[in-house]
Length: 297
Image (tube, helix red, strand yellow):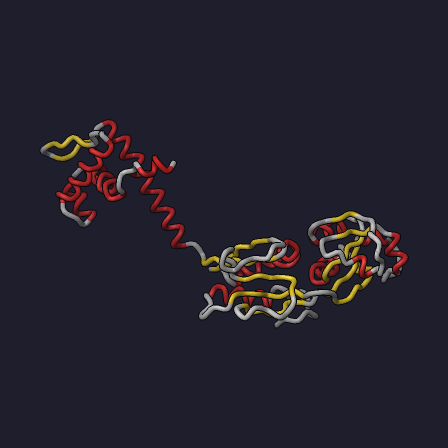
């Protein structure tokens, strides 16, 4: 691939050929390109020498494409049209803001609210990177991140608390039936437990032993299993607020505030791009719009 690219003719020569072939006149091509007729003729001659192919028949009344020249012109014109369309798309593309979030934040908080973001900020294209790994703002070209963390933060980072990690145990209504809520520790032990990477069950049930139950590497997967009636999951209340309000899940116990909290983070820059500032403000005021008890910084 690299050797074939190095053998390509110059862009100026191809442009001179394309315009000359379209206008069938070096003079008309020179007027369109804003150069001299001699310069156009020289570029086309250099192209023919580079390719080893005669592209035009020069006649007193103008140019005539050879058979190979006509076929080449069709391909070159198509290539210039593609470049023109790509440039147009680039120049009209909305301003892109990249946000890095955990898969659970993406699935439970961000994605359900993207319609609101698009309505409020129609000129901003949000690129979401869902990953548990820590993002490097510079290397990964991330503008904003939502992470489970705690102070202190690096001096070059701006951080705002989104919500505390208030953990609750949830299950489908069908799994608990007519049991009186909240469930006791004994009742929880009797139900299938769903585990995620946070692994809060042992601390909540105050047991050092390994607890049985399905294990998932992401909280959102454990919550999907809970919605399917496969067991009881522990999760931050912010992630299940919609399902609790809709009756798809019921809160069977309250584990309390644990560990780190969820923060909105970005690199300090002067001045910040207007689009990044707009998405930052939207996250602070709209991301948890359905959680009136959550702090909105």
